[in-house]
Length: 576
Ligand SMILES: Nc1ncnc2c1ncn2[C@@H]1O[C@H](COP(=O)(O)OP(=O)(O)O)[C@@H](O)[C@H]1O
Ligand SMILES: O=C(CO)[C@@H](O)[C@H](O)COP(=O)(O)O
Image (cartoon, rainbow, N blue to C red; front, side):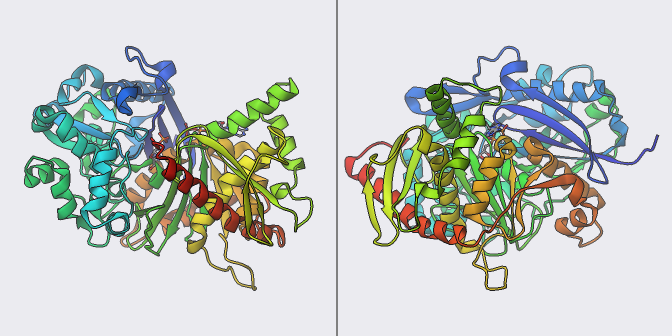
């Protein structure tokens, strides 16, 4: 059997840890998965997390992730993985979460004993047993201070790529200094979930990744350094220099060789002593590494939440969006939109339709899909008819910042007249198409400044739209996505579907280890990429007439959102 090299990408998400192994040809050869709710023992978690509703806190026990890592490595061994062939390791961590290491951490990591599990040895390394999760919304006060620090949300977004967000690590750390001052004093280092993964394999605290550091509201993207003024705010009543030491340096090269795996892994699993750890990044930055994404392509991850990702040379921050450094390629940025209401919101409509029909088919989406495809775009019988549109948020939303609720409107594209009304709507049937349209109109509204015309007089739009995540299996959704977002070459899904970010992490390891001097990630992966095996076209993209009609709807959609936001502000409703 060939001894060709293998690479592992770990994906430490909210609800599971995956380990995915690829070869140098980018083919997946092993996958192991640990589902936190189903497979863990000893943690009273739900959907991977614990909550303190009174304070809007959401957090995860770090020891759970150690148990998960022990089990995933054991599972790969049981599947027959020859660890001695693994030349590189990287990872993808849920973004923004932080891990608090105590004074004994470096010592415990350095002296890992191969006869024991990670869970047996490392819980004492943490000064705090929990990691705040991205769903946490306990930091409104701190966010207000972050937004004010440089003069306003616009200025913070200019500097750090995002306005202040509850889940971002900077506001979370500031709240931590206030809620747990003694624990903060006893904290030697702070990791992100991504650098936590790398630290476990290195046997010492790994630095932050150049892309994932942008999810903290602390990194000045243009300066390529921490923003001193914001760092000062974040350190609270503690010393600025002390916070700098806790955070550590941030190397620029996403393919840097951080070091070899700790002997723990060579002795316990048979890793080769020269197996190298490459910086792990955030789950969203890793997702764009699952294929050689071009700056004109868009990726939509249809998971529990919806994220929209583009790689772009333009840095155009805005309080409504996110910009990060690209995880591998200096000079490129990652543009991101992140919605809390994605799959769950669609499931509510799906279930309401099945209930109203008293029919729950074996494929639970069958009725939803059929109705969505039979419905006219925007509920219009003719192009001058009023358009039906709405917002469907069973959970508080980030984009735009609104409480949970449902709002339905009609919009006349000829007169610009917008009416909040349920008249003319047949619920829940009309909602199947309307909820998908609502989600994709929001993506088109917020990404239109980043697309350009593909030539031949065609309007600005992506070259391709790639769908990943659980919802990418749904061809009705893909069809509507193509009608709204366009995409001159069409809408595609990745063969690897739900495993895109673990795959991107594994490809990062391949690139880090096998790149020629100066060779970019896109170039290396592009050369080895086997289009017909790795992706599948599932819907048409740009369709003349339909795309333009949805363009008119985007104007109405923007007006509708503004109206709802103003109404909520006027009523003073809390949005968390
Ligand atoms: N055939 C389908 N059509 C539409 N949505 C689907 C389909 N299958 C799964 N989903 C959605 O996929 C979501 C889970 O996606 P996944 O990427 O696994 O989630 P996560 O973000 O938790 O990793 C669920 O919310 C579910 O509604
Ligand atoms: O907060 C964000 C992005 O800003 C989320 O996208 C998290 O990164 C979610 O990770 P999952 O565990 O859902 O994959």
